[in-house]
Structures are given as structure tokens and as C-alpha cells.
Image (cartoon, rainbow, N blue to C red):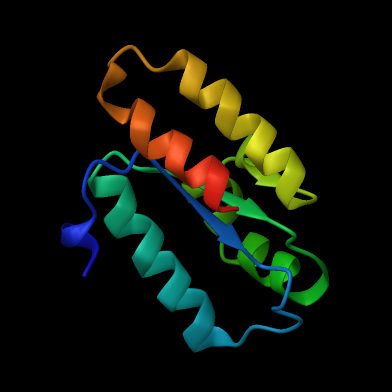
Length: 105
């Protein structure tokens, strides 16, 4: 499934409706992030709180796979970081995709 993502440079995991996470959920997220990383896709995580945040830190997913500066309190902060990421891109080929992401939120 991940190999079918056309011209995506950033994926945002919105965790606002995830009050708890078990071991299988943690490893599913880890596998997805590792696959995205292989494709040079940046991962942001937003709205991560409580038990899920603690669990992802305990297994080292944060900060080893997703650095602390890619974890945001809310979606708005993630979108602002996405805008900054967009400005840092050298290749204009991602411009339309990022624009589409911003407007679909």
C-alpha cells in the first residue's frame, strides 16, 4: 500500500481520537513510519497525548523514528510546520501535493 503514494513528501498522523494504544498498534505505527522513511517521506504526529504518547516514547519511536520537533500538540501546529517544510523544499515537484494537503485539512 505505501508504495502507491504518488509524490507525497509529508504524512501527518492525527492521533486526536486515539486515547489508548496496545502493543500491536504501536508496532503497526512503527512499521508504517519505517516504510514511509524508506521512501524519504517525512512523518509528523499531531494531537498525541497521554498513554499513546508514553508508549511511543517507551519503545523509542519518538525520538528515534519521529524526532521530537515533528510531534505537535495540535493539528494547527503541524500544519504550520508543514508550511515551513514546504518552504524548505528545493524541488518544486511537491508543491501541488503539499498545497492539496493543506486545503483538505
